[in-house]
Amino acid sequence: MAIALGSNLGDSAGILSAALVALAKVSGLEVQAQSSFYRTAPVGPPQPDYLNACALLAVTLSPETMLETLLQVEQQFGRVRRERWGPRLLDLDLLFYGDRILTTPTLELPHPRMIDRAFVLVPLAEIVPQWRDPRSQRSIAELLHHLDCSGVQRRSEAPPDPIPDP
Ligand SMILES: Nc1ncnc2c1ncn2[C@@H]1O[C@H](COP(=O)(O)OP(=O)(O)OP(=O)(O)O)[C@@H](O)[C@H]1O
Ligand SMILES: Nc1nc2c(c(=O)[nH]1)N=C(CO)CN2
Image (tube, rainbow, N blue to C red; front, side):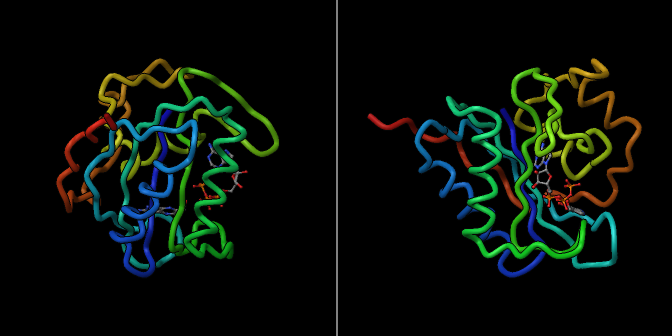
């Protein structure tokens, strides 16, 4: 499964890195790959630029438990829910879970807005370029073809793949 990370308040690079460390400590969850960090123009109301990234996770947790885990890590980093699409210290979204298509009152998979967001698809293409949207069957490259990527700028190299514990 994959997640998107975003922050546009505080030390965004430190927050995204620390959130990935916090997630890697959750039992039943392994961070398999993470993208570079990207500075991205805000979508929605006027607000500071975001730092965005994506990560690929191997999990034994259900989609619902994963969503709860992401909400807990958001709260750990002091996220206060205010206006929709407004500024935040940390936003974690579940992008997809295998090729499951799911709609419950609290969780929709794949994330319904991810295919319209260059700030999600550009980092995602780095770590899972072969992914296809199970609804439209379109590849990331096909989806990106229709999007304006001019507001998405790479800020850091992806770290090397994690060395497995002995
Ligand atoms: N795939 C998903 N990933 C994360 N949250 C989801 C997903 N599908 C539904 N939700 C629901 O959306 C709720 C609101 O999420 P959030 O506050 O992060 O929205 P947002 O970041 O303002 O906007 P967006 O969802 O467009 O990124 C969550 O509490 C969760 O129940
Ligand atoms: N560039 C960018 N814009 C956004 C982002 C984000 O992560 N990056 N998140 C939002 C709330 O989901 C609203 N707007």
